[in-house]
Length: 512
Ligand SMILES: Nc1ncnc2c1ncn2[C@@H]1O[C@H](COP(=O)(O)OP(=O)(O)OP(=O)(O)O)[C@@H](O)[C@H]1O
Ligand SMILES: [Mg+2]
Image 1: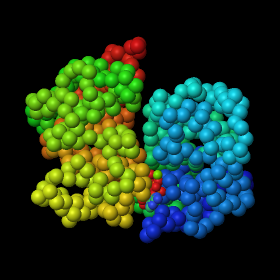
Image 2: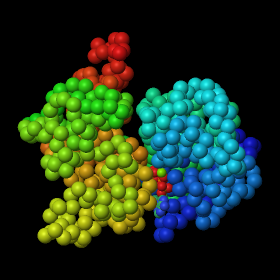
Image 3: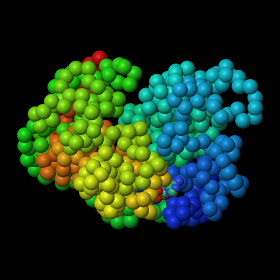
Image 4: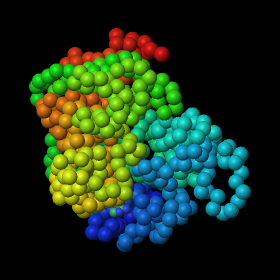
């Protein structure tokens, strides 16, 4: 527990950082105590990642001072931050895919020109894994590991360098609930040993496990509060600057004919393992079929196979009665099927293009955006401006390059585009990942509007609350199979949770 008599390990004083006309951090001051988990909370684009990157020397603040262990410091580069004992895991991983875990951890640590003693490094790393109960194959190449384990490699890299302060920028955005629980247990072990953590997250169940929270709004600090003397509702209104309702009203269902029919579908994952086994279901117009499951149980492969970016090995897909099995993605787009993938960087955006350009990717032949094979720049611009307003995308204009957007704002560009381009179905995988609470509310409202407009919607999510609020039926996926499809009214969170963990529908022993 932080005590005012103790010296903070880190203190930021009036840190200001501008990007041209954007003031990402506006005279922000806060401090972090030894052994504390300190959350930075704020809407998408509030300046959390920027502040973290200033502390880590990745960005240079325009003004302000930073104190580390009571001494003023000038952190000019990550190398200097590391020397002080500051480690950081970025919002987007920076691991080298075709190097091993061990190589990734020691890469860049050789600055003094020593010949690396790999064996010694391996011993230190194994000891760390042992200490924190991590099972990690140090010889495996990064691409062979599930994302949850890649996250651990990032953290190990910081610990290997003896970090006293660990900055984690949305570490759990890509973790399953179980992995995020394990991460918290380990973080608590670290803080008990005196390590401090700055944690950036949008998930309130994680925020509530911290010691203190500093809230940022539009680049300015609102306040720092003790976690156990605040609530989700209070934090939300400090973040957003107004009261927002945290519930959604779901209109009564009005189902039409079947729009999407999947029968006996199977497919392989990227490592050529069976990822989808004999999956069958159908979705009607006006229906949201929720897909519950811990990430990595075939949801990604299911959506990718339907949309045509992954070949099926057997089975069929019909759209409005027509066989579209293994159609190409362009054809599926022309059929009005939108896709929100779970990995926004790998699939979905071209970073060097503007927001407006990304919004019309794939639909540039739409009459609103082109005529007689010329692009209609006015149409593209006005659609860009409209989407920025609707989704509250934080950016100076529709001509802003997507690479300069905050993580959550990049996600909004994909959601806006896919909502707009689709006319029959929306397939969404973890669409609210990395979005702030206000935008999630907006997206939920829009999904329900699409449902009322007669779309068939497939919504894969690990957030059971989200599924129970939105879906009409819930299909539970486990190890590539659909274990059960249940109307929401006939089930509950506990039952679905058990099915997700591999228990049989009766709720008895897990199935292997
Ligand atoms: N390199 C850059 N060039 C221009 N603008 C930038 C750059 N990096 C960040 N910004 C802008 O600074 C503001 C703050 O962004 P930041 O990434 O710090 O937000 P965030 O709080 O981390 O949001 P999120 O929750 O979406 O990750 C945003 O308006 C963003 O577009
Ligand atoms: Mg961020």
